[in-house]
Length: 111
Image (cartoon, rainbow, N blue to C red; front, side):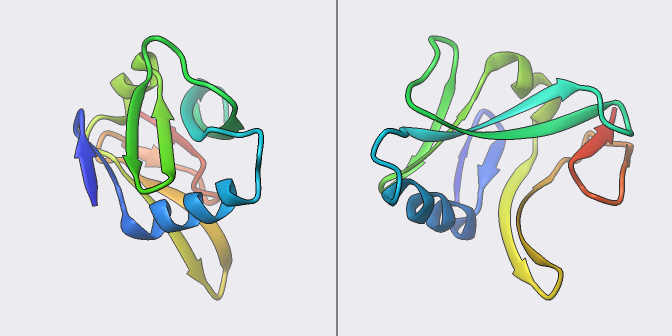
C-alpha cells in the first residue's frame, strides 16, 4: 500500500489501475474526485485522464497512477481506495472515515 497526504491506495487497486491503463494508449492515470450531489450529499467520481493538474496529489506504484485534486483531498483525508472483486461484482471502493452516512451504492456520502 502507498500512503501520502493521508490517503491510502491498496495493492488490489493499484494492480487493477495498472491493468486498465495498459489497454489505454492515451490515458495517464485514474483521477478520483469528490463532487457535490448524489443521494447523500457528495459523490465520488472516477475518470481516466491523459494528464495531471498543477495541484494534483499523485499516488503511484509501478505503472499505476492515481490523481486527487486538493479540493477533493479535504473530503478524502484518511480514506483508503480499494478494488473489490466479489460476488456482487467488481468496483473501486473508498473507505472514508469522515463519512457519517453513505448510500447503498457506495458512491455517495455525507460529512
